[in-house]
Length: 111
Length: 113
Image 1 (cartoon, each protein chain N blue to C red):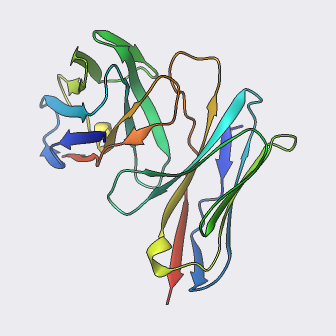
Image 2: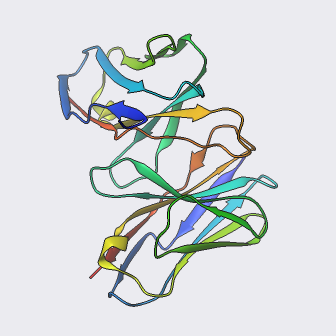
Image 3: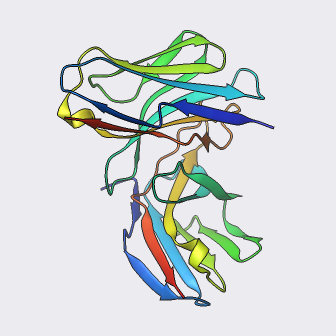
């Protein structure tokens, strides 16, 4: 069966510090991978998606970037965090255009 | 106008009640309709998945899609305290190389004993 992991689960970072969140998927090959952000009381906003290694598409311009160095690994990064980057970050995977399955999330607080 | 509109609630019902959760959408390209359940501080989990108009039943849950009126519903029968969560509707458009889900804001449901 497929499993998706995210770490860390919780992170508190000062403004201006770098960020690296990691997501890995097990039990499937060549998945589509997604990064979402969920602000308090808000729906999920798609940040990035990837249909293959090294292929990243951005949905919204922002202070963040994503990379996919391996087939089942997806990384969300920032060089300098802003207060507005606080939120709940969710990684998801799908097979092609089929439904998406979400990881447990990383709660990021930028102070 | 948002592509997907969902009443954020909160909705509070007694145990055993029938719950109706609803979304409206504006994009005619939506072909697949998901409902996700999200417990506090957890990732969303897929609850129901329907294609095009019609009903789909899974235990106490029924998903209903009316494409003519662009209206999506999720019904929960015999609601339980364990159903207390945020429910997110998420239509998906066809014709893309990836699954572009568009999420509603989510409805917060509390089922009290």
